[in-house]
Amino acid sequence: MFQTRAWQQAWQSTWLPALMQDPQFKLIPAADAYQVRHPLKGLIPVSSLVACGCHAPLVGSIRSEYWQHVAPIGKQAPSVEGWLQRALPFIKHELLLPDVVLSSEHYATIQRFATVHKLTALLRNESIAYAVDSHNQAFANYLSALGANTRLKLFNRRQRLAKMGAIRLVNLWPDSTAFVEQINAFHQIRWGRPCFKGVNRSFVEQLMIQLVADGHKVDLSALMVDDEVVSVLLDLTVDHRTYNLQGGFLEDRFKGISLGTLHLGYQIEKAFDDQAVEVYDFMGGDGKNTNYKVKLATMSTKLVDLTLIKSRWLALFYRLNEHKNRLLNA
Image 1 (cartoon, rainbow, N blue to C red):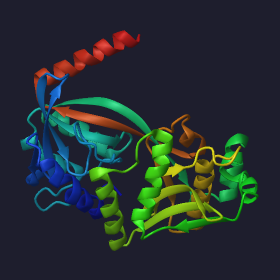
Image 2 (cartoon, rainbow, N blue to C red):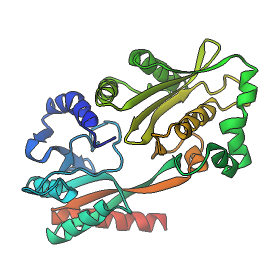
Image 3 (spheres, one colour):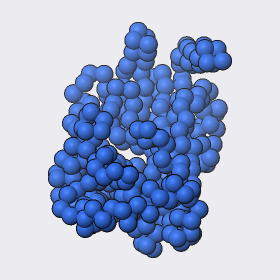
């Protein structure tokens, strides 16, 4: 999804105009990238090159995972190496590559590229993206493999919820405004801030429109009890994979029922029932209180933030800083 035309068009029509108003940012069309100047430790000015569509220092855009930007080299087919070649002349201090799949050929390509061009490759951060394989097993088998308490929250509590009123699952699309207002209200209660605001709200609304125009699926899923919306999930299906981009719910609406987890159960079951969907992807990130994704997932992917550093003094600074952190954490 993060490399689709829809994602890039939505990002460039919303985030790019906002960034270009700030003199710290500069668009590099030849590399389909932008440069951002930011102070390291609040003092040292650093210039970072970042692919368009990706988040970066001073840029609060939505996280774009599974990095794999491609571009052609001459008459060759588009490739990660092709994009790196285009970006190379514009690296002043560093090139930021967020959320690269560690086990992928792309990671190996990046490492080889760094070696050939005498760039220092540093692994800055790690995270894990979780998902459910909905293609190679039945939903009943998936449920039976879960822990008893997880299965209770994800599926068995449906019976208790049915006693509270009539249960309905409704796709609110194309009313994205009502959906965003609802998820923002849930997040305001639970987190003290809205889920989508400012440029990110415009981006998400544009993304959904572009995805549908390009033949992909948008499910603004609302779990309702009688006429009350008690949980919402933003699910986007691209190329046989459903991405759970965000969710929100009423935390204490019904005693003993985790509405967010129960709603995920309905959506995961929907993925199993849809022959066109092979994976239900929770992506990276943890929950508020527990890492619920690890308990629900059947698959995991390690993601790493890579930095290719051209500046020798910057590479030395990062290494010294990492050494200091290891000593402090020992």
